[in-house]
Picture 1 (cartoon, rainbow, N blue to C red):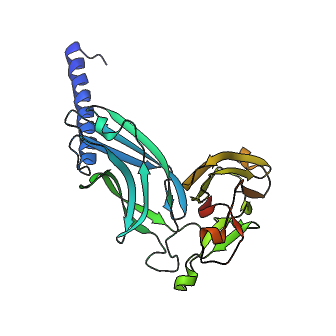
Picture 2 (picture 1 turned 135 degrees about the vertical axis):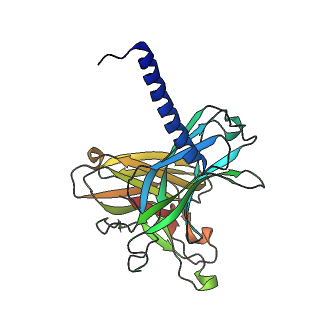
Picture 3 (picture 1 turned 90 degrees about the vertical axis):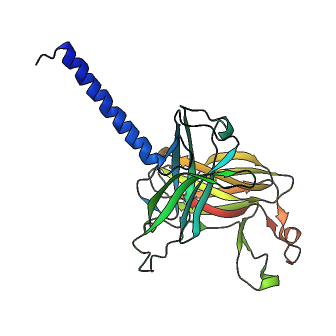
Length: 294
């Protein structure tokens, strides 16, 4: 079939108009969720199906148009999920450049691993099939002032699959209750000693290892992490909270059905030095808030 020059031009214009309408529709759909004129955001998780007790990578893309007039100051970008007025997770997202330097007609992107902690009671009939939670990306000001919602949607979160193996804690761990003497409660903190060992079941597929915790040694720590027979990492740790996430390949995991994870530190602090009300002189390495392998 032969198309004349006039028909070709008309045909091209119709195609261009179609794609313009589609792009405008997509942007308008995103823009409904943004409180900033001229700024649209999209957010995707690396896992198609979300569950509790899951580390997943969040990718965020921001698009500004000619209608964007700038933010005028720096904000902290935060990804958060809320269910029944309680936070499921809240993660700070780093983005370059700072928000005060954002310009019209630009695309900005960032990504980060986020952790959905265990919270679904599979024996609760209302929760056993999963829940719908509110998920949003917000810009929080450094000082007083309202935050800005730039993306929002509902996400489905299912109970963690039953075949996810537990982590078995072997030697070198200490449970500490810093408030029992004062309050009588039984809330424990989990600490490593100078060397702590736990057992992981080899999934024989790509997996993620996450260690979150706190270093209370004022001088800092030299931390070594071994997985199986290989050293996975070694790093210096300043006092304060820390997070380490490792994306592991089947080659790194090897062929053994079980793996030993070893966490070693070069310095320790005694329990009674950290908590003077406890008459216990055993040595502590790192406070472990979350140890995740899946």
